[in-house]
Image 1 (cartoon, rainbow, N blue to C red):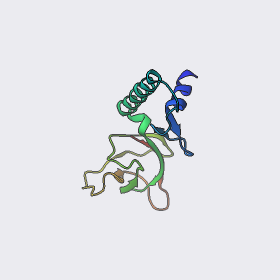
Image 2: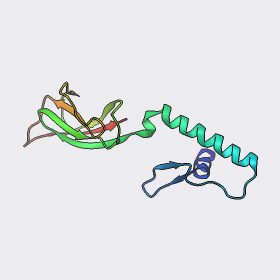
Image 3: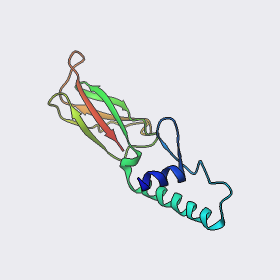
Image 4: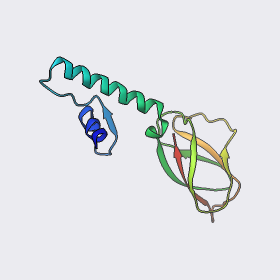
Length: 126
């Protein structure tokens, strides 16, 4: 509860639930309160930078055998990924093909799946 209150106090939250640091400052506060708010904001930013799961995206996608270009939605290059749900037995790995837009897409390969019967997976990208 305390952490949520601090997050709401230090940050704002947009309609999609994404933390927007530094968007809202308390007005009419004293110097010490303002400094405390700045230190707290810096600490939360540091936490988010050190924990990639806080800056992640979950994508559900149908994979076919061979290469699959997947939009990860992070707006930066993927640090890592994990399959969190798979509807069928299949191996999935990062392709060795050159990716010209790593900030938008990742290329994954699958050893099973066809256009008629793809492998549905949920992947968390971070």
